[in-house]
Image (cartoon, rainbow, N blue to C red; front, side, top):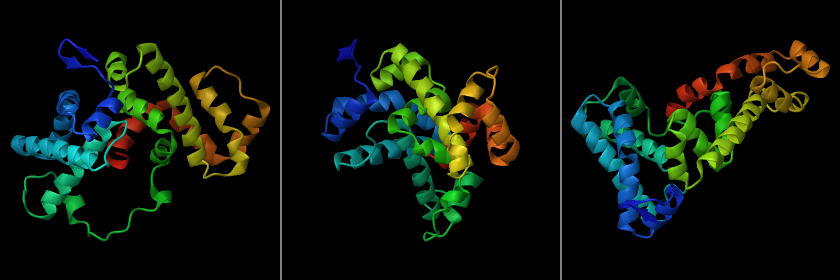
Length: 245
C-alpha cells in the first residue's frame, strides 16, 4: 500500500520485497532508518563525513545480503547497527580510516581469532532478551531501546497502535521472566517463582505468597534480580547497543 507517495508496508514486507530487487522497498527502508543509523554511526566515529560513509556502507552491505537470501527478516534497524559497527572495525583494522573512537579502536585491536565470549560471561539481561521470540525482541527494540512513539512502531511493524501496546506489554512481561530465569542460572527451585516475581514487579503492591517470601529469604540471586527489575528498561538500553545488536 502507498499513502501520499510513501510506501506504507511494514518493515517485514519491505525487507522481503527488497530481497527480490524491489527498489521502491529499498528506498523506503532507507528513508525510515537512515537518520537513526547515521546517529548511531556518529557515536562510533569522530568525523561527520566518515559517519555518513559508514551509514551508506551499512545500507549497501545490508541490501546486498538480502539479495543473496540473507540479512534481516523482521527488525531492520538492529541489523544495520551491527553492520555499522562491523564496518567501522574492518576499516580500523585495515587502516582505511583512522578517525575512530577509542571504542572502535579497541574492537579493531582484538585478534581475528579471538574466541567469542562464553555465554555465562554475558549479562543476564542480554541473554534474556536473546531468548525471546523475534517478534518480542523487535517490539522491545523499537519501544524501549529506540524509544519510538507507538504510532511509528505501528508503521514499522504493520500493526494497529493498540496491538503494538499489547505486544509490548507481553514482551516486557516475557523479558522479566526470562531475566529472572537467566539470573537463576536455570535452577529448578527458582523456576516456579519467575512468573510470581515478574508480576510482583509489575504490581508492586501485590502481596507475595508465603512460598515466594521463603524462597527470596534463601536465594540471593532471586533477591538481587528482583531489585534489578525495577529499572529493567533503563538496564536494557544500556546493555543492548553493545551486547545484542
